[in-house]
Image 1 (tube, one colour):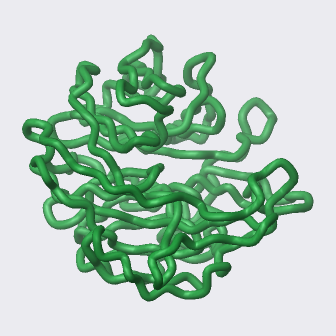
Image 2 (image 1 turned 45 degrees about the vertical axis):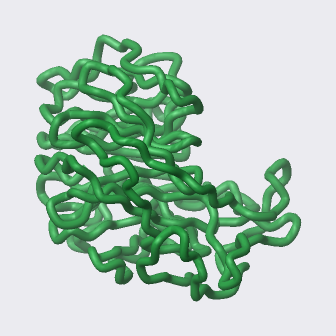
Image 3 (image 1 turned 90 degrees about the vertical axis):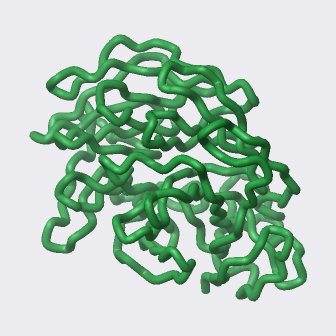
Length: 341
């Protein structure tokens, strides 16, 4: 069972939560043997001009034991989040009420929405590191909503599996860019091409005008110029993560500023790559997105969750811990409204 939690201030973390082992899985050989998935930390937010006010507070919007990742905001102010292991997409409304949005997702771990309103997913199928045994269902990039539109967009590149896809974003003209070790693009005809060289990727994002593609590459973000046909060329370093760590998820705001998750929090950059500052987070975070009314709230997913007594949810030795938390914080800016992601 996944447990859900109404909105509470970060300092008040006495949470009604279900059994601690609900989202647990046997840990494969070489994987950390259970324990907590993360740890809470007290943070103080300092001002970033035009972005966030000093003293802004993170609020816990949801937590559970069955994962949360790959988030995207939707038109009604809600937030969709992928739950790979239970094979569903869930939705938080602006009041933090949760519901199931899509089921039978083939292990979707990240989602985006195209100009036609279709939900497109990085479908990880049975490649979850917490599983044991062979995986016969190939990973894919595919449309999972609405049901009548379900289809596979890509499963292979040059005759080989695309591997375990991580993140994705789709342009207004229909090219899907995704990461899976490296970076790739699927054009509207279904042709898959590689993007860049010598990349250790995770997050991927387009600029508001879709002329620049951003990809995390360890401690830096690289950028590409997007051509009229959707091809990405001219790889170059765009920004260094000045607060440390490697980049994970990304989002953009109305001014074209880039937000990159990393172990210490969300690092913010101008459209020309200048580092503006860090929004520290109460947990190590992975995904980030603007949502809420007017897209004026920043959401993140963090590793770990707490029991009713405030202790970290922990799993026994040899059992993987999928506990996650979703936090949100009010912003001075708003997210880019020209695309859902």
